[in-house]
Length: 486
Image (cartoon, rainbow, N blue to C red):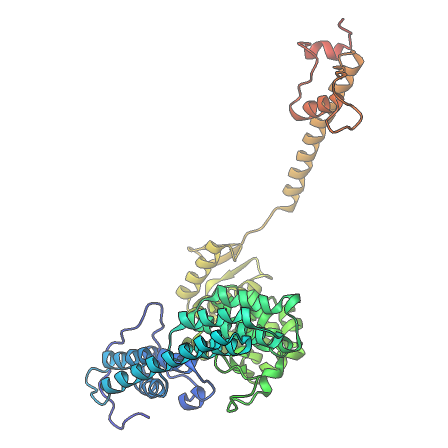
């Protein structure tokens, strides 16, 4: 794709929060992007083009070609603008105003035709035709990038769905549009609607893999890594047998993600949120997810190393794929936090057997330098992930020890003090009863459990609360003597 003479590369003007990747990723761009279709194909090319220095020119040119094969003029304009911003001296790609104007007219004509057809269907009062009319309009607006109108027409299909399969199709289309909108709450809502007991059907069971993948993606985007891992590792492996080049294959979900993405997302989220026992039991020994891990063997090796306490090897594998994951459409926002959590867990597990460790030994164990490891330790301690202290003078990491003997003594003294207080209150009540100072219940109130508290119970509760009792201005000295005051 790239020319023999590359134009001069200038500073990339990137959108907010996007990574700046200088290293060449391990994947081949053509082979990687061939696994996807639809809008996600363009989005991934655009992200790579605006984020990766080595692949910027090739990816943006491929994005321009991809955009011209569709009917979304905005995508084409954004790709051309990005290419001109990054490579201002490259004049091979100029905005094709003729194509944009022609495409806009075609989109307008197609929209008018479909809306006219829907109006005719409504006049004929045929529910199935009306449903198909709304479906055609929703898909049309999805293709041209009008996602608000697309979701609106898909939602209107609900009143005209006559079979469970129609309802499943409607919700699945709404999920796909919501993913493109990055409306993750709507994705989770529609997934739960399809999973509701009243919506269970053979059609929805066939789509269980897609629902798990979409739910996991929404949870990943919201930062719920543990819940996202639960969804990904329970994804039905039937997605793996899908034919990516067959548009009619119901198991294929490459308009959103591929089975390789499920393996990567699920594996990294599990590493960041599960302990070693869970990783062994729920990930490595999981018959469903094992099929996905075979597609990404380095993720399986990283998890195996972590379970075996070989933390340095695990982190080295993840670090070697950092450039690839920083160029992933759904992973790059969360990669720093995910890697931090994995590394934090590794340091915690490494430090458990020791009361103190030198920073140099810790840095050597995790292939880092003392300054970097010290910054990581400070961050972990502030977050509450590590119960330790740093001795900056002697360059030591010290575990916070608890004096169990002193703790037992403190607990015993507190128990004795509480027992003495309760015993005093009970003796006080007994003396009050012996002195015939009990307040008799009024006949107007029920004392047999008829809905109110008995006076005797109320007096006891008062005594147990603050040490006082009901019975006039009798002094405590008089009660201790046991005398009866008439």
